[in-house]
Image (cartoon, rainbow, N blue to C red; front, side):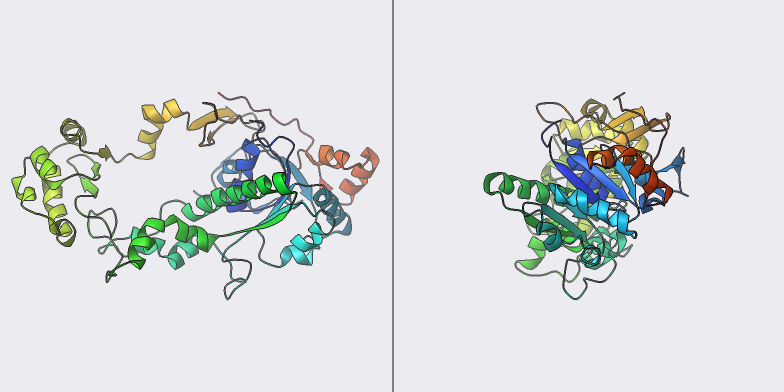
Length: 406
C-alpha cells in the first residue's frame, strides 16, 4: 500500500503500544525509521512464554516491527544525538513513548523539534498522560486494566476481577496513536500546520469501555460492575453470555426468551417476562446452563441455527486458525523471516479496495538499515565506519530478507 508513500516517521518507541502503532503506519506505506539503542531495544529481549524465540527473535519483537527500517543508535553520545536531531529536521512525524520529559532532556521535545521543523507531527504515548498527578508513574497494560475498571468488568462475582487475556489496552492504544497521527497529517495537508498528538493507556482503556461506562454513568448505578456467573457483562440481560455444553462452551447472544425456550425445549425459561430478563438473569442463566450441558456444542449449534439464534462455539487458538472465515480473511500470513526461518504474523486487519497491505520488510535485525539511513543523511562511508568503531551506531551486515507473502 502506498497511501502514506513519502511520509517519513522517526520512531523512538519501545515495548508494545508505540511499535505496533508505527507498524500500522508502515503497513500503509510510510517510511518508518525505528531508532533503538545499540544494545537492542526491550522488545528484542523479552518474549513471554519462557522467552519463546524464533532464531533469537522474540515474540514481542516479531509482532510489531514489520515494514520498518532499523537504525541502532547511541543517544547518550553527542554524535548519536546529532544524528537523531538531523533525522527529525526533515521528518513528517516524530513519535515516542518514553516517560514524559525524557525527550525534552535530549533536546528532542516537540517545541525543540518544531523550532526547526514547524510542520512536524509530534506524537507521544504515555501511561497516564503528558501531565497530571500520575504523569510520572510507569504505565503498563496490566496496571492500567486494574486502574481503569477493565479487570473489574471482565471478572465475575465468583472469580473476582480478572485481566483480559491479552494486552488489550496496548493494542487499542496503538490504533488510537495511528489514528491521531493520520488525523494530524490530514490537517497538515490542508493547512500546513504541525501538531502534537498525545495518547495514553489510561484513556485508551476507558475508551475500550465506552459502552459499559455510558451505561454506568447515566441513570441508576448498580452496586457492582462484576458480571454474574455465565453472563457476558454486568449490564446485559439474560441469556447473553457463555455456557458450558457436554463437550465445550457456547456463546449465546441477543435473543428473546420465548425463542430460546422453544429452541432448548425448556418452557420454564419462557415464564420470565420483562424486567425479569435483567433482574433475575442469574436464575435464567442457570436454567440455560443446565439444559446446554446435556448435548454437544455441535448439536446445539445446529438447533440454534434453525431457530435463528445468534451463537458461536468458543474457539481455542487452534480452532481459530482452522476457521474457514479466518482463512478466507487471510488474518495470518506466513513468510520467510529475516533469519530464513518461516514466521507467521497477524496481518494488517483492514482491506483497501479488497486488498491487504503487503509486508515489504519482515522485522529486521538490529541496525540492518543503519548504513543506508546515515548515507541518506549525507554521511560518507568513512564517517559511518568511524561512528561504528566508536560504538555510536551499529550496523548489521548480514543480508536481510525481503518478505514475500506465503
